[in-house]
Length: 64
Length: 212
Image 1: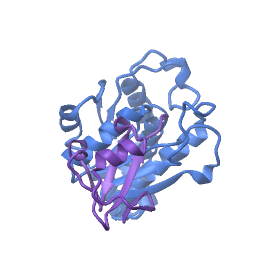
Image 2 (image 1 turned 180 degrees about the horizontal axis):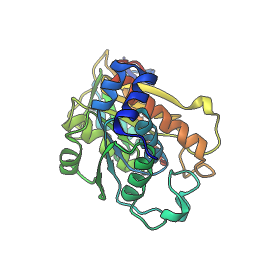
Image 3 (image 1 turned 120 degrees about the horizontal axis):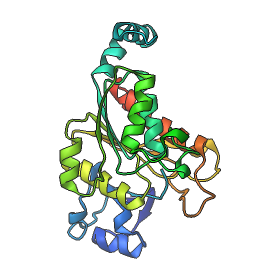
Image 4 (image 1 turned 45 degrees about the vertical axis):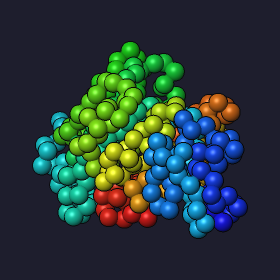
């Protein structure tokens, strides 16, 4: 299981880029934390989600 | 009659104690974006006695800013960096200010403008700019603390604005969801609440209190 924003998902083996695309995230507006570290945007394609991973996808909204 | 630097420092030491005053006055904090968030963050940090602020914004003060930003009608048309510097120096005459009237567009800008800061406050309004700065700081300057904001538009409850610690060096303030495009504008107290979360977290980090 992979835990993303508190929800456990059966997506081990999927690339981070594929998950973000399927879930409808706009990559220009996010930051992704995986197991305590930020994932560089250049690594989204090659980051393969593994059992036990915990991720947080921060999706920024407008206003400031 | 403006008090001397010594009198200012003495007053802050009386309020905060020697140890905290020493930490605050030695700190360098960058504020990226000087709108509703950034102008309020800077005022709070100046009042607390932070030694140096790096203030960055490309924009000028507009009549449409005055409902939530720390500027005055007499300052319309000035660069925000200049107008905010004037206001901060009226509050805290001995604070050190470094200003950049510029956009932060890419990784080179992040390195050039932010390398000397201890803590960086993200106070932009566009989500793409927030994302760019967050990713660039956390990738390129991993020893810095970044305090970002997302979700403070509209009239939602004050109690939904929170500070969360996302990684060891990345804090996120706001309700995470209230997008200005979906809400009836930006209200001074709610934006200031979020800015206060950011400013307080900065002071907590300086005091070695790292929990959100």
